[in-house]
Image (cartoon, rainbow, N blue to C red; front, side, top):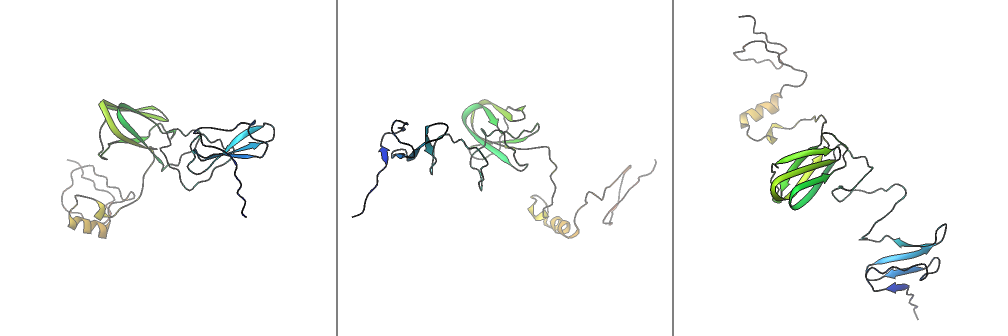
Length: 210
């Protein structure tokens, strides 16, 4: 006949065993909370709480933690190095003052403010309180969210003219075929310029003296 082993258990929410309830190495379960406890030995005789799936509570880790991604706005993370491309998003409800603790350690962060319908809005003021905090204020209580990114960096790259709204199709085709002026093809003008220039790169145009 199969034997059923049942650990010490409690059905009371929030109930935790103490060293007087367990012997060293013994396990106990809070069935209601879905938590497991172990009495450990060593320099300090304590009952430790084991981390389970969907765990709610504080976790103290000594050592590195490796994960595929992080979920959350990161507003309470401290002593971390944030990648240049990282963004922080924090939501607010019915408040006229929004304080975002982004922890990007940046004197010139980029912040954009949106309402609950994802429309970008302009607040009454947006202040960089310090290198890790932004304060957004409104004339009246608003709901929405703020997206903060680390600013002050050069952005480079290129896109197809097809991805730019408001450009005539003929111009788009020409831009995609011929390209546009690059950083190495500077145009210097010291006077009025008229007529048509067919050169791919114009190194210098001098209008002369009047």
